[in-house]
Image (tube, rainbow, N blue to C red; front, side, top):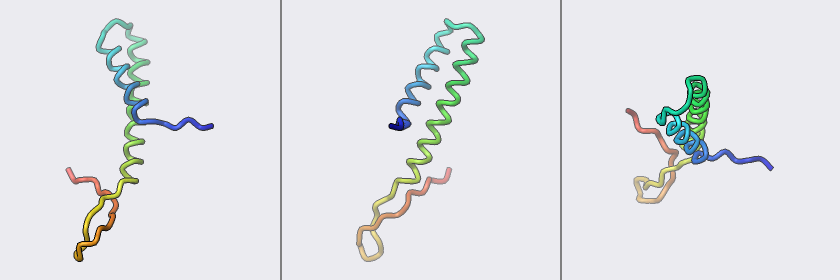
Length: 77
């Protein structure tokens, strides 16, 4: 059985690593290892969010007032 990657799991990992790094109770080498692990987990968060964004559809109405769905478009910054 394949484990499903969950956004929340990766986010929790990032938060734990951040807490450890902010605590300042670990040596430089361990801090670097945790930082690298945090970056990898954060990248996974962005990958999962990107995949979910592609699946989201917006419910809207056409000119005649009928309900239709359209793909979600990311707002321009």
